[in-house]
Image 1 (cartoon, one colour):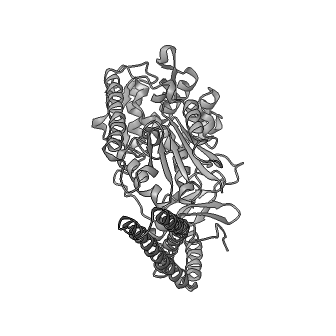
Image 2 (cartoon, rainbow, N blue to C red):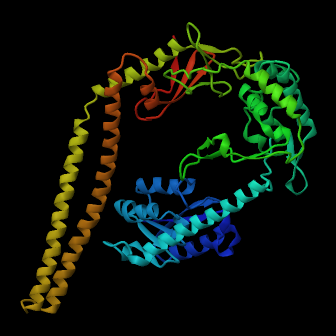
Amino acid sequence: MKYIIAIYLRLSVDDKRIESMSIESQRLLLRKYAEKLADDVEIIEYVDNGYTGTNFERPGVQQLLCDIKAYKINCVLVKDFSRFGRNSIEVGYFTQQIFPLFGVRFISVSDNYDSDEHKGDTGGISVAVKYLVNEYYSRDLSVKTKSAKYTKMRRGEYKSGNYAYGYKSGADREQVIDEKAAEVVKMIFELAAEGKSTAYISKVLFDKNIPTPAQHKGIKGNYGFRFPNCKYWSISTINRLLENEQYIGMFVMCKQRVQDVGSTKMVKRDESEWIKIPNHHPAIVSEELFKKANQMRRTFKQPNKQQRSYPLRSKVMCGCCKHAMDYAPKKSPVYRCGYTRNDETELCYKQEISESLLNKAVFDIISKQAEIILNIDNASNIDNAQIKTEQLADMEKQITAYQKEKQILYEQLLTGKITLEEYKKLKQETDTKVENYRVQYNKYRQSAEQTRLENDEKLKTLQTAKTVKKENTLTQALADMLIDKVYVYPDNRLEIEWKIKDFCTDTTVMLS
């Protein structure tokens, strides 16, 4: 049977300066080490190039953890602890709790650490110190980098290179005017100052066949190719442009912050926290035009408009253009695709669907699936899990009994009841029995753990089905629990992305 070794390679942006940290040097070191661990070895690589080690939101390490939970890995090999991660709590959790649970050996080559040599302990104070050193090194580097960055921002010296539409990066990454795009910006402000609505401005831009900011970046050879679906000027894009003070020469930074530590989600800061420096770069529009455009724009707004609540809020998408459908709170509310409102050639032009019809269709499929789940007998699966748990307990008792038998043999040797040759022979027989039981125990434990995880999922699905049966209509709580997105197509077809994959197998629904 092959011994599966996972070698994990990670390189952050800062590590690229150090040659010994390169992916190639890590690969060479780990492959050479792995080949010596066992005779019949299969090596699988997991690589995260350009990712920080402060969290585990990395594609390579996530795939590694998935394969470990599927019992596909026997051993994990890293160059040092910092390659696996720089968060002491999370690294310790995986190496001391998760890996042993799935019978996975963990080796850190440069740290001279092998979990097989530390069964029953944590590796001592030296390992704990290395965890903390790696974490505090990362924190210290982060603080210094941020401090230098914010100092440059306050001086107006920070050059992001990713400038607002209408500007481009000049010599030495200076912010200069992009004349072609700047003409479009001026036109948008002039139309807004005349009292034209953003919907009207969007139509004008479409009729003039003016590329959107994302398309403009693509034409310029930047990253516009990442947004193939951004060929229409949306109202939100125009509103953001009209609110942007950079167009009057204002340097604006620190508008957003990370929502939580380790998160990638950004939230808007209070305006009092923004860094603003006037007359920082060439202006595209005058302050007078900027103020007039925004004053006229505010006349179209409802100052005390309340946010509406409805079951499928922010979940209904157009199946053709993949953009969110607008909710129109009419006497009979509808969802409509507003993204292609100016292009009659699009399949989803003026496409809309009744909210009541959509809610009913989604609730019907949820209710039918709940009935199917509640009619399935899950008791036998739970009983099987209980039997496996009892059998594991019996195996543990048998292993303990053999350990005691070895102790008795040693006592008999010391008291002269058996000879050394007899002791060695009997001990070898007992060791063989113990090893056989351990192999069986590990296999059975893996099977029992897999059964437990499956039963947990089944119980979760069962509880969800019971919750559904208590409702008579689609509620926001149900939608938030079960549904990620609902895609609406012009041929009366719906495609649903479910949050709980095992709850509903049907993803396509035809409206009657």
